[in-house]
Image (cartoon, rainbow, N blue to C red; front, side, top):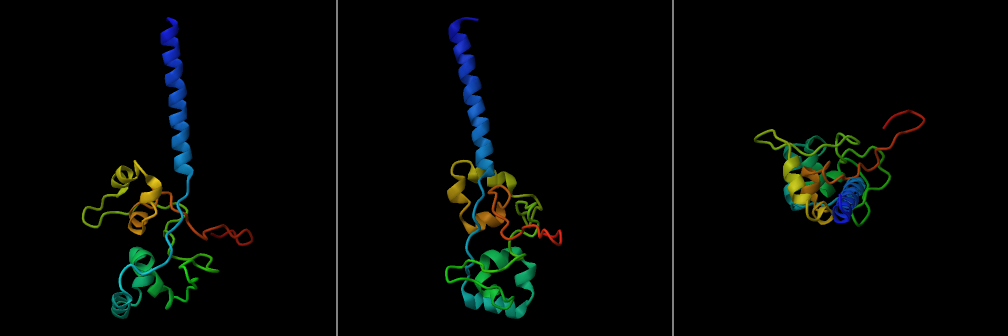
Length: 158
């Protein structure tokens, strides 16, 4: 092989290693969960809770991303002024499967949103993944934090 070919091969190896390493670093970045707020008007959230009192705790999207602030009150979940949770170990509105979170499933086809999420997060995952709806649909792809789901050393629980 001549010198030019050897240099090109070396360049491809170095660039390839960098791309693989960058992909690993990008996957390890954890996205901070959006603050707790109502996206829908509080009156609609209250109306829905009045009709279906358990909706806040049974519907992850409704309770955590659509009407979080309104749902926090009846569940006695403390929030700061800026929508952060305070003193809530085992808070139920981090992904229900944390730390093994998954992307959401489409209601009509029962397919995962993963391929859609990967397309949307290809260019600028940081900005896209800071949107509440994207966090709901793409929890795993966006690597959204699992909040207070830490192991209790004494009890061996999460």
